[in-house]
Image (tube, rainbow, N blue to C red):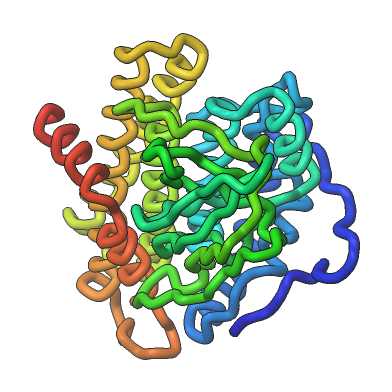
Length: 367
């Protein structure tokens, strides 16, 4: 279903290198405007945005968090959040792919060794896409000479259908230890199943990873870190908030014919508050990445989850307002304005119990 990458079966051209944060923002705005033109059609027909993602990655935007020591720009996290929000305003399914991609790059930054980082960050700079997949407890990694064999199945996860590289998480070996495995999507014995089943985020590339006696080299296996909180958790929550902020902005943009009212004022305040919380969480995450400690990381996670709670709430409020405040018939199928509510709602439903517990704490202590 959908289209395929325009570069399938032929060499991908080299990706552009973005040289400044100003260029990154300008690129995001240009791409978002382009993505918005057919976003509704892609949602209605579930046309997968391979061509759009190719354009995004070749623009260099997907490499803006690569560390300077690997020739990357490494933008500030507050700016990264705004860039993801800009893309989400054009198409939130594409921004959700970016969420997963940047989350994977943060995992590489924090847990991979220098040799693996060099390979994977070079791939990101070249335009490769990354995603993560969490395997079930039944998955098993078994020794096979100097290498290993993996069999198992992951939970469904966004962005897998588009990934060049996948970080397979929560893999248990025969000793009961847990590891993360770095895999090329083209690895023999690895199958990607398009099993998306939802009413929103219809083109976010959700799929399931199936490994059948897959050979894994020892150098691709890293011990899974079991920290209660990490910068990857904070970044994940911050970018979730950013996509929801983009959904809210897109919904409000469709309210151009609504008369001024208290409800419209509340939406404006909510969007401004969410953007401010994302900016604040980004600054705290910047500090935690440079000065990692339980306190700095905890502050970043807490702040990012507070931003996520606020942004998702305002996204749902803005989507509901489309039908309550707008003039004319906004419920017709052709306008497809319900996609904003579907996208915001399915993202709320898709959060893990840990996400929701952290958000509940942020909401409670933020009163």
